[in-house]
Amino acid sequence: MKFVSEPKNDTLKTIVGVACASKAIEEGHDVSVFFAAAGTRLLDPSYIDELNKEMGPDLTVVSQMMATITENATLYCSFASVKATLGHIEGDGALIVPDDKIKWSGPPGVIELSSASEVQLVY
Image 1: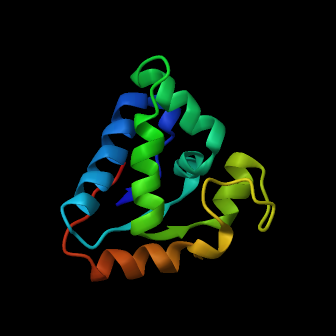
Image 2: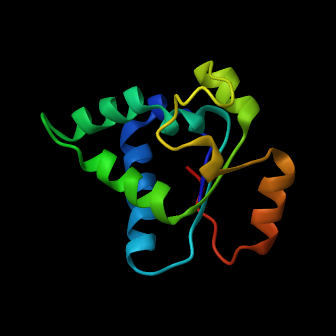
């Protein structure tokens, strides 16, 4: 699963992507998720709060799905994208997942995952 699009441009599509990744994990699939470009916004706690509100007042559905993803998927991320999109630097603890739980990469990681995967979903 790759999240690269600006999630603010299509909130519903973003939530569907998160739901698909979470459901694949729940069904026992081996899931890797690469966050790049504006897709790194999904690692921002305040943006996840916004997505929760889209689902309804006082709901935490998106947080729950992201917890499933961050606790069970192999996570990849472009650190340059985190810096450019969110303004964070490595080690500042600003993401919904600790830096040491992420495989930091750029295009080489995307290519490696793409060539090794049987199925790819891109949001």
